[in-house]
Image (cartoon, rainbow, N blue to C red):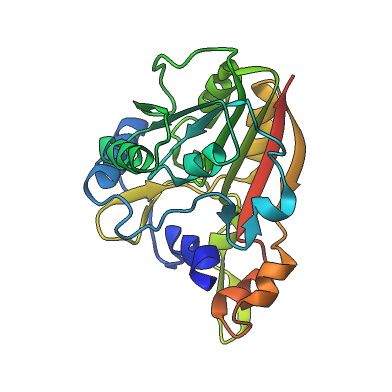
Length: 268
């Protein structure tokens, strides 16, 4: 059980001396990250899929979606397609998804076909127009994918355009305080500024670039896109924590600071 809740912690390294790569403009970042997902996929970065939002936070406990029967859903960053399977099993009427990686789209398509689930899959960066219908979806969601965007405000505006009025946007990502803090023999120290949003290389096999945005960046970008935040979760589920190895370093860390955050927002 423990691996299902903790595997996303490898997504963001805690190396103390990482520096922003030179020449990391938006095109370079997008090209490098797209190449990684096409060539490495989830060989190193393990997938996070519903009902899990990230470290020790689950849909089963918080019920952010509620009843989705006969609802139209769009996933941003679908990966292997297992989150779509979760919604198909709960009687969603339509499933759509996009991902920047052709390889991930292919994996999702194979998985969904194997279980008899129909979905519309689109290979495209989340920042770009790609033929997704506007004012169409009841829900747009993203499980540990939104943080890869090179244009947060633009992406949120696109997502708002896909949703019907009063439609819901739910997303999760690594909590920005997580990478700021390191530990040494049970004592926690800040290793970088919370306000530092520069892009840095992730310590994985292959090359990935990432930035740690402040929580206020997400909230303000949502507001500019016409959303109102209904709920934010950063507290781990107590029952998941209690069912895991209390001596685990990740459990000890999770008891001291948030590792994941989840936001539910509604389009006005």
